[in-house]
Length: 110
Length: 118
Image 1 (cartoon, one colour):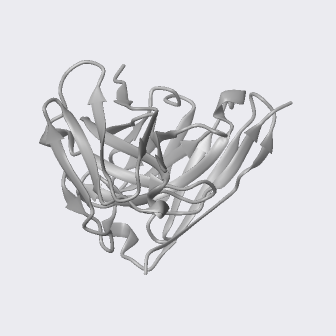
Image 2: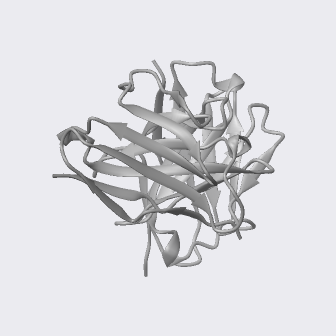
């Protein structure tokens, strides 16, 4: 069974930079995992931030960027703002029209 | 403007069945793959099922395979999730989401709540 790993929590100072990662319990994340990233605030539906590793969804500020770092997908927030405090989820395509979400990262801006 | 509205949630006893609906508008539904994703109370997102635009390819997560079935009616712009043999651990907010074509889920509904409890 494929498990997608994310840091349970992270904190960043306002104006700072943070990189959240998304890995596989066995194996490496690559572009063919088509990693995408979602932001969710409590009580709201998820919002798509990044797809196909590094393509920003419409309307997403350019302080959000995606990449592959080593064996993991990464979401970097540059110049974090207070309203970036949220939950962040990645999802990986594992083949055969199957997707797996990571457990999510709770980002605190303080 | 893409609009997805889920309905059909409610309270059901363990072992029972429920059918969820997702009404789509604002885009060419018949040209889009669709997903169901769920979120248990206080937990993260879990991918549940995917259906390709013609409905000929359907996939389900291991946790629901054999109990849940995704389907669609392109003439009604509606996505379905038939849920049978429900368990307490199926209690969650169920979202439908459009497949963005880039192996992503690009638009989401607001969800419908399913509670499995005796």
